[in-house]
Length: 153
View 1 (cartoon, helix red, strand yellow):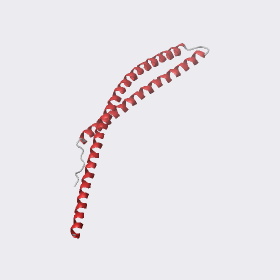
View 2 (view 1 turned 90 degrees about the vertical axis):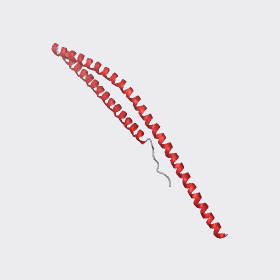
View 3 (view 1 turned 90 degrees about the horizontal axis):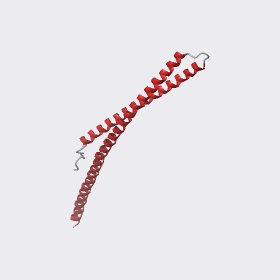
View 4 (view 1 turned 60 degrees about the horizontal axis):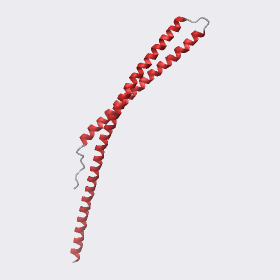
Protein backbone atom coordinates (compact mmCIF):
# COMPACT_ATOMS: atom_id res chain seq x y z
CA UNK A 1 0.00 0.00 0.00
CA UNK A 2 1.27 3.44 -0.90
CA UNK A 3 2.29 5.75 1.86
CA UNK A 4 0.60 9.10 2.32
CA UNK A 5 2.32 12.20 0.97
CA UNK A 6 3.95 14.16 3.73
CA UNK A 7 5.73 17.42 3.03
CA UNK A 8 8.44 17.72 5.64
CA UNK A 9 8.89 21.46 5.19
CA UNK A 10 5.23 22.28 5.85
CA UNK A 11 6.15 24.16 9.02
CA UNK A 12 8.72 26.23 7.12
CA UNK A 13 6.13 26.99 4.44
CA UNK A 14 3.65 28.06 7.11
CA UNK A 15 6.20 30.41 8.70
CA UNK A 16 7.15 31.89 5.34
CA UNK A 17 3.50 32.42 4.40
CA UNK A 18 3.00 34.17 7.73
CA UNK A 19 5.98 36.43 6.96
CA UNK A 20 4.52 37.13 3.53
CA UNK A 21 1.16 38.06 5.03
CA UNK A 22 2.91 40.30 7.56
CA UNK A 23 4.93 42.00 4.80
CA UNK A 24 1.73 42.57 2.81
CA UNK A 25 0.07 44.11 5.86
CA UNK A 26 3.04 46.42 6.50
CA UNK A 27 3.10 47.58 2.86
CA UNK A 28 -0.67 48.18 2.89
CA UNK A 29 -0.39 50.17 6.14
CA UNK A 30 2.42 52.28 4.69
CA UNK A 31 0.39 52.93 1.53
CA UNK A 32 -2.61 54.01 3.61
CA UNK A 33 -0.37 56.35 5.61
CA UNK A 34 1.00 57.90 2.41
CA UNK A 35 -2.56 58.33 1.13
CA UNK A 36 -3.48 60.17 4.35
CA UNK A 37 -0.51 62.50 3.91
CA UNK A 38 -1.60 63.19 0.32
CA UNK A 39 -5.09 64.00 1.58
CA UNK A 40 -3.59 66.42 4.10
CA UNK A 41 -1.60 68.11 1.33
CA UNK A 42 -4.73 68.42 -0.82
CA UNK A 43 -6.67 69.84 2.14
CA UNK A 44 -3.94 72.44 2.69
CA UNK A 45 -3.95 73.31 -1.00
CA UNK A 46 -7.74 73.70 -0.91
CA UNK A 47 -7.35 75.93 2.14
CA UNK A 48 -4.84 78.09 0.27
CA UNK A 49 -7.21 78.40 -2.69
CA UNK A 50 -10.02 79.42 -0.35
CA UNK A 51 -7.85 81.95 1.49
CA UNK A 52 -6.61 83.47 -1.75
CA UNK A 53 -10.20 83.75 -2.99
CA UNK A 54 -11.19 85.49 0.22
CA UNK A 55 -8.13 87.75 -0.07
CA UNK A 56 -9.14 88.74 -3.62
CA UNK A 57 -12.66 89.55 -2.45
CA UNK A 58 -11.32 91.74 0.35
CA UNK A 59 -8.92 93.50 -2.03
CA UNK A 60 -11.62 94.13 -4.60
CA UNK A 61 -13.84 95.80 -2.00
CA UNK A 62 -13.93 99.60 -1.98
CA UNK A 63 -12.21 99.65 1.43
CA UNK A 64 -9.87 96.64 1.85
CA UNK A 65 -9.63 95.21 5.36
CA UNK A 66 -5.92 95.07 6.19
CA UNK A 67 -6.42 92.75 9.19
CA UNK A 68 -8.24 90.18 7.03
CA UNK A 69 -5.53 90.42 4.37
CA UNK A 70 -2.83 89.81 7.00
CA UNK A 71 -4.75 86.83 8.37
CA UNK A 72 -5.12 85.39 4.88
CA UNK A 73 -1.40 85.80 4.17
CA UNK A 74 -0.52 84.32 7.54
CA UNK A 75 -2.87 81.41 6.89
CA UNK A 76 -1.42 80.84 3.40
CA UNK A 77 2.10 80.88 4.86
CA UNK A 78 1.12 78.36 7.54
CA UNK A 79 -0.50 76.12 4.93
CA UNK A 80 2.59 76.30 2.71
CA UNK A 81 4.75 75.29 5.67
CA UNK A 82 2.36 72.43 6.45
CA UNK A 83 2.54 71.31 2.82
CA UNK A 84 6.35 71.41 2.87
CA UNK A 85 6.46 69.39 6.11
CA UNK A 86 3.95 66.88 4.72
CA UNK A 87 6.00 66.51 1.53
CA UNK A 88 9.10 65.75 3.61
CA UNK A 89 7.13 63.18 5.64
CA UNK A 90 5.75 61.69 2.45
CA UNK A 91 9.23 61.38 0.91
CA UNK A 92 10.42 59.52 4.02
CA UNK A 93 7.33 57.31 3.98
CA UNK A 94 7.83 56.53 0.28
CA UNK A 95 11.45 55.54 0.93
CA UNK A 96 10.31 53.23 3.73
CA UNK A 97 7.61 51.88 1.40
CA UNK A 98 10.25 51.01 -1.22
CA UNK A 99 12.24 49.13 1.43
CA UNK A 100 9.14 47.31 2.65
CA UNK A 101 8.17 46.42 -0.92
CA UNK A 102 11.64 44.89 -1.30
CA UNK A 103 11.05 42.82 1.83
CA UNK A 104 7.63 41.83 0.46
CA UNK A 105 9.19 40.71 -2.82
CA UNK A 106 11.79 38.68 -0.92
CA UNK A 107 9.12 37.06 1.27
CA UNK A 108 7.08 36.24 -1.83
CA UNK A 109 10.14 34.71 -3.46
CA UNK A 110 10.85 32.56 -0.39
CA UNK A 111 7.28 31.25 -0.33
CA UNK A 112 7.37 30.43 -4.04
CA UNK A 113 10.62 28.49 -3.58
CA UNK A 114 9.11 26.27 -0.89
CA UNK A 115 5.86 25.87 -2.83
CA UNK A 116 7.78 24.82 -5.94
CA UNK A 117 9.72 22.31 -3.86
CA UNK A 118 6.44 20.97 -2.47
CA UNK A 119 5.03 20.62 -6.00
CA UNK A 120 8.11 18.70 -7.13
CA UNK A 121 7.92 16.37 -4.14
CA UNK A 122 4.20 15.86 -4.77
CA UNK A 123 4.94 14.98 -8.41
CA UNK A 124 7.61 12.50 -7.34
CA UNK A 125 5.19 11.01 -4.83
CA UNK A 126 2.50 10.67 -7.52
CA UNK A 127 4.99 9.07 -9.94
CA UNK A 128 6.15 6.65 -7.27
CA UNK A 129 2.55 5.79 -6.43
CA UNK A 130 1.74 5.17 -10.10
CA UNK A 131 4.87 3.06 -10.50
CA UNK A 132 3.89 0.94 -7.49
CA UNK A 133 0.39 0.52 -8.92
CA UNK A 134 1.83 -0.58 -12.28
CA UNK A 135 4.07 -3.12 -10.56
CA UNK A 136 1.13 -4.39 -8.54
CA UNK A 137 -1.07 -4.65 -11.65
CA UNK A 138 1.70 -6.39 -13.54
CA UNK A 139 2.05 -8.90 -10.70
CA UNK A 140 -1.70 -9.55 -10.70
CA UNK A 141 -1.68 -10.00 -14.49
CA UNK A 142 1.25 -12.38 -14.26
CA UNK A 143 -0.46 -14.47 -11.58
CA UNK A 144 -3.67 -14.64 -13.63
CA UNK A 145 -1.71 -15.62 -16.72
CA UNK A 146 0.05 -18.41 -14.78
CA UNK A 147 -3.26 -19.72 -13.43
CA UNK A 148 -4.79 -19.79 -16.88
CA UNK A 149 -1.77 -21.64 -18.35
CA UNK A 150 -1.57 -24.09 -15.43
CA UNK A 151 -5.21 -25.09 -15.78
CA UNK A 152 -4.79 -25.56 -19.53
CA UNK A 153 -1.81 -27.85 -19.16
